[in-house]
Length: 541
Image (cartoon, rainbow, N blue to C red; front, side, top):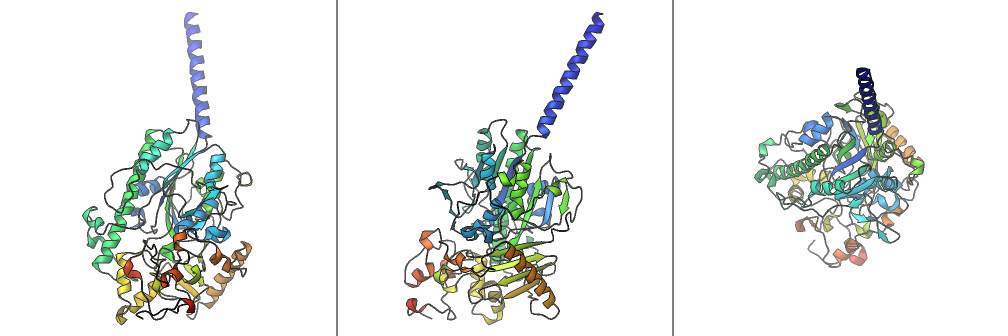
């Protein structure tokens, strides 16, 4: 009897343990996931190892792609920091965000970010580095953190003067230590790399890179040593970002949080080089994007070719956090959740309806008369990019006399500007800084640099008309003021960096202004520029 009694007790204990383990597994399985967003500042989609780049090493980005999903056709609606991040955070295209369509805006109180909604629904939220920026976000007169509470106290030694001293991983650890065990978290790692300035030659001196590693220089720039050096400096800063990402992955593993964390790695807009950042071409808007979530992505190591937009992220994250959009406090979203891709086992195209994305821009940096922007709308569909330029009398990269302010200063930019008076190289200057026609059409599969405009070539008129019609129909449905005939509203929104307001007029009146993001030699008082009569003054032209 004793043996029978002991056996029964042991069986009951075993059953109890199994029930306990099963309950814990069910609890873990239904625990809302953590979210880690890692965003580079200014990087184009080709420049990660897994996308085939031989001169940038990104083992941690590559690991996430191999253990998750690599998105081959991800786009930001607007290729500039603040409006790109605004779309990411709200699920709305930039032209649907009033002031937030512009760079350096006053962010409208009416548009709530998904981070704010997550915080309202039990998530521990925070960011390190660069959150939503640049611009001013307040609510009821108090600072508003669109990406959660800032965690920027921890500093570290860095390899170059161009890299931020913010210790991203240490700040992430501090953030994790402040949450309760039950709380899910959402954290924004906003790297300030590879944003300029770079320490010239750091890729070679600190990164041990060689000029010969660059397999080819893009054809719209000269293939000279200074441009190759500039590219290697850019590569070195991407690799610094990737190392910080690796440190964060190790922290998650140590704390047992990795499996239930959705990790999203991307960049806000294209590389900070002429004709890319701040424009609306393939390398401007096409972003690197990978996601890993061991508990939520059915089949890892997949490459997905669906056309996805940054506006798809907000509805995706609300869904996995079990927050209904109508109860999120957020405005209606244009984006579509990507969770069907998470649940799929397939590669390639998952949803054939995701066959295009819309892109566009309004005012980025100032420097034109009356602080106007350079309005563009575009559509990417299949192998083609169609772009419509609405104000073709304006300079796309900003006025020459005020330094082409919508193009960051760099050795590459300086080289191109020095070509302006050399007739044999003038096509390169025109491509990067010259005025543009109303319509542009490119086969981005064959012409990734968007150098061969097909819009007015025979055989492409039907395609131009079809793409333009589809784009306009969708923009009308989205109440885009530019399409509805009220585009001037974007030029009248106040520029939040008060030191730069009326930059053009003040510059021509002799005032010294902050233009630290471009080089002094970028200012070019060309003869072609016509000044407003009230500001005309004698000059060397």
